Length: 405
Image (spheres, helix red, strand yellow):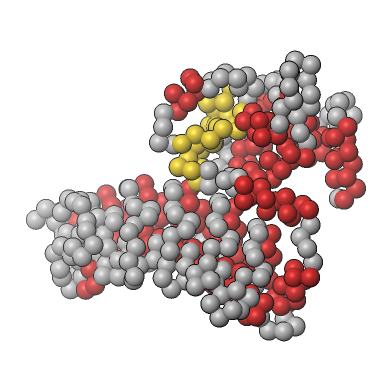
């Protein structure tokens, strides 16, 4: 008997139905040697038991990484659906198994499967599971931040309802809409209901509307106990306007499509705009200076064509490649039209590498970015403070920064 090879899998297609088999049991219990022997003896890796559950579902549900690998290598349907519509990726995300999730994605698992009234997306499941690293890899692979679940709403709503603060941060930094509502209930309503002060503060920092009313005409504060920490926190925000710095962050995140760390650098560029240069016929705006710092490249397009067509970038710059600006998979530092892959996987780490490249290759700063780089050099990295010439703007900001710290 030969092992079944992978074929297209459709919702409701149960294949060879059976009661729970020895393959299911071995996969679920992590008996990799027994599973391997069963496969060698010709057992089907795609046989389904009650509720259309495959051995791969069971292995992923228990985080059995060795068994997951054996099943995938033997041709298990990576997108098989049970009667609830859940795929193996949903199961791996729900328990927060990063290794299982990564293997499934490497074997082509669908990141955004079609949802039904009984189905939540893998990203929803990851937010329920609470592993922020799983949430990040799903976002990096293009998971929809606004996928809609009939019961909760978006992944951000799910993360807030389940008190997954790290997942909330990951979603917001990736660009999740903080005021998206289901039945007029926002993520802040959920955070208030579970009385999580940390989440309330994070959501407000990202622009959550503290006055939003749900279908019962209740504001987030109406879901808290009077005098509780959550209630006092929301009362403070109702009575105290956001600072200029907080409003600037909210405005940048709203206007721009990059993540939170990148938005901070953009804010720094606005605070330290480019200096006028003798060689420039007109002043460069902060928005134009951004184009000197980083460029977005859609990963489905040719990297070589992009590099050939880039003109005017003489100094090193950061090339961010991904499906969209909230889902960057790879960062490159480009010099002389040659891409150097960054070791860091976040925008903050990549920008730090870009800054240090100037010292490694003895490259001068781009004039459009000179103020920002000088501030990073003297204030953040404390390099050659006494001998570096600073513009009045940099000196002023550095003095304020040092006095506040």
